[in-house]
Image 1 (spheres, rainbow, N blue to C red):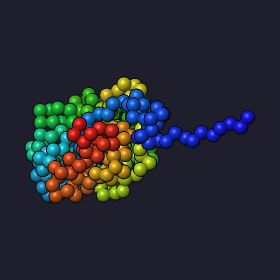
Image 2: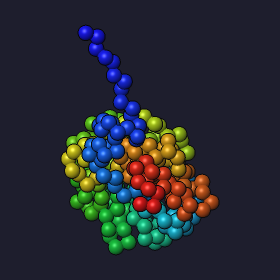
Image 3: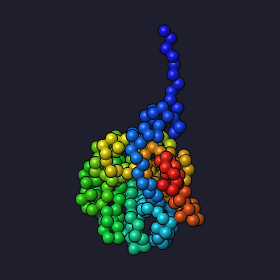
Image 4: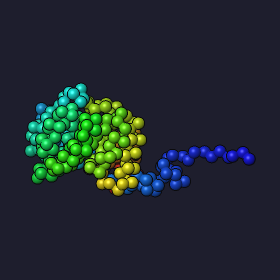
Length: 271
Ligand SMILES: O=C(CO)[C@@H](O)[C@H](O)COP(=O)(O)O
């Protein structure tokens, strides 16, 4: 008896064999229904001499939230700003804020309350505060303290960090940020191997019926290969710095990024 060899199922959207990798209906069963697309610009490429005005321009362009990249020249080679800069920007926009703490453990431990406070909304609504798993020996305690201080806790992973490092704190966070570049600078190239990490985290979230968004940050442009691939893998929050500031009309940039993200989710652009 000579066993017949079978071709591996075609892992493409058009596959209709119900294989658990790519069949649209099976995908939804495995990775859940798509979550709302959110376009979240990083202020890293902004003009720091008029950061408040640039925040207002991002609100006018239709962005969902604004990310402040806090860097201390220790956890990452670059150096940006502290909590007071974020506090001053609050008077220029009512958009929700998000603070990514790319800082040492000493800075995280010492300044988490201040960053949580200045990231809040205009009426004290919880702001998203992102700590890096690599900078938190006591990550469970750090995330719990953000929630206790009235913030929305989120955890970030650098490209080399396995997703298992955050598997046991998924119940504490509202977002997981998968870095798709090595943190520190804008304008870098997207790292495509991160989509498997996104997919793995998304399946945990769905299997445990958790209300958690997946964010991606770094090299995100209005292309199928970046925002489209991340959306298809299960991300729904997209941090775009140079990819959005490159547009003369940033409202057009938000539209194009959103359309490609929805296409990646298998939805029509106007859904
Ligand atoms: O956070 C970082 C680097 O630490 C950057 O990823 C910016 O947040 C976005 O930069 P672009 O890659 O979108 O220009």
